Length: 256
Image 1 (tube, rainbow, N blue to C red):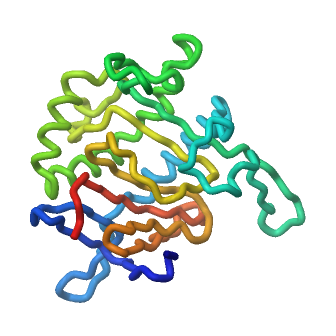
Image 2: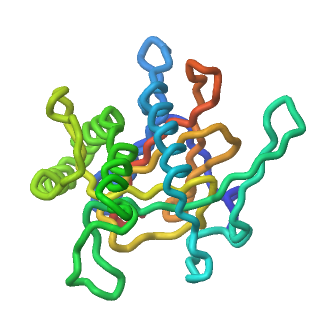
């Protein structure tokens, strides 16, 4: 089974599960009744700001993928810890560490379902490190607001439950309420940096939102359940760089 077997989707798509409830929402763009192209995804400025903060996070707090632990979610060729790239217009080759982060306000320890606590990644090694990590990971309130509003619109029951849990338990600082935004609904953030992932399912996830940023080629998301792949949506940012802005909201529901 290869990605060539799957139908490509490029426009905003809503898929329904066996229970006739929304199961997958892909946001890129659509056309209105007059034929005008309307963007549905993350605004360029918000995405660029998030990308810059993520670059700082990866530089200040590198967290390489632990291939020795036998994590099968990453491609075999990702076992080389560095990504190489050529600086545009030059022959200069540079390298950056690949990595993955789990910045979780609460999560269950592997093998210990009764232990629920913040992840080591988000806590850092000191109070100062924790505050810096939280600042770099949780000042994306415009993106979180947009995601929350889409989930509220298309997944109202999941939104209700996630919002109750979030409001009762989140501790990472934010300025959601000060600016009148919807605010977040997710405790946990996973960042895959300079790397790719195999098709897999994290069985403990209830609902997840995925978005990407950066300047690169490809980046299709494949959902084998429905034999579909979703194309990266590109826009030019104000500094001339390419940014992929897409959100995929996936409820854990069997698709037919």
